[in-house]
Length: 128
Image 1 (spheres, one colour):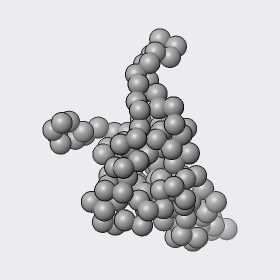
Image 2: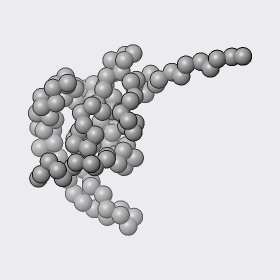
Image 3: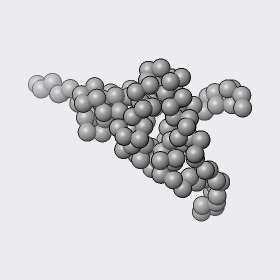
Image 4: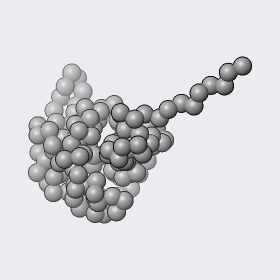
């Protein structure tokens, strides 16, 4: 496949959300090796590829639409991470600035700095 195939494609994060939540839950364990490879993107990809090699993907109809089905939860999570990497870049896989936990940044501008337990705090509004 050509690199240009994915250029300009934006990940459908709502569709990926179930698998991305699973991926985030597995980042500290199953995918710790992948995260340890960052910020070296080639190293991270090299560590994700063996997990992807075991994934069995199927296209199946669901309610008048089509979806990619991956029966193994780890393979589904790895597939979601791979889609994030090719559409949004590895920059979306981040470590929380407060606790160091790895998370997937699904915001439009990839500006999130904290994990789900440590969302950004809004500055207090001035009174008076």
